[in-house]
Amino acid sequence: MKTTAWIGFVIALSLTVGAAMATTGSEPLLNRQDRPWQPAAPAVQTPLWPKGLSIAAPALPGKEVFGTGRGKIAGLPVTVVQHVSVPTMTIYRPSGKNTGAAVVVFPGGGYRILAIDLEGTEVCDWLTPKGITCVVLKYRVPGSGPYWNDECNCRRDPAEPMALQDAQRAISLLRQQAGALGIDPHKIGVIGFSAGGRMVADVSNHPRRSYRPVDAVDLQSARPDFAIALYPGHLWKKPGLTLDPGVTIDPHAPPTLIIQAENDPTDDIRESLTYYLALQQATVPVEMHLYAKGGHAFGLRKTADPITGWPSLAERWMSTIGIVPSVGP
Image (cartoon, rainbow, N blue to C red; front, side, top):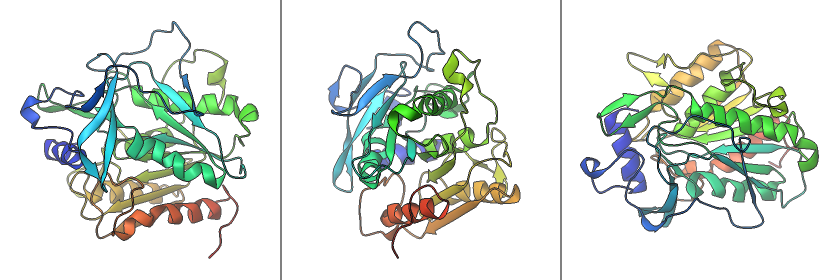
């Protein structure tokens, strides 16, 4: 994500009072809480990795904190998590009739912070009444994927793909626990927003694990069975519609749904177009919906823009690929 793109993102979340004052992953917060973010009951948060295992640290390690941004999206504040070094997954069980399907949620934030409610828990508020187990991934940040670094005013790539590692581990954990959770191990999908959309592409197209197996969990497949990417970033590079060299399309990638607004000021519409064409050329089942308006970082919050009705479209798509029962017209 280039400089102007990242500035567009933080404006959208109103997290900063100026790039010159910011440190990567440490934008100013309101109601700052100097402790790790925890979900509300009855959701259950568990660590991804065995206790005592040494894993790569974020680019700029620090104490995990959370709070709200300085502005609002659709009239509501955004809860932001910063400096995650102990990644977790939070499981929200279905409140409706269990379909056996599960979705792992990758919040966005430029690989710098996590928009944990806007693009995390609020997704579960939508999915669980539909009978879908929802899992919010609190992955390592900052610098766990390709990100804009304030200190050098440049793009940097991590030495280890920490976000991808956390995503793969979460999917494998869910498959191992499928029986206890009432999940069909062949109906585990992913949904990601912005940088989380790049994570969707990464975890969909990596046939091999990005880390050495550490225990029996890693005997399980780490690839999702279906994938949804909203306003994805870090996928396109100039000239034309060139796929980022860090992404290699695998013809066995899962069915994918892509959604974006044409007036997105942060991630160019060519991010979605490029990924769509790359999947299509590899004969991967892919569906894309583009809307004239909607901007960036709208999550599931309703506005007058038609794009905010995308959850109904996604429900129908999931039914057409056999993940959930068919929905009415």
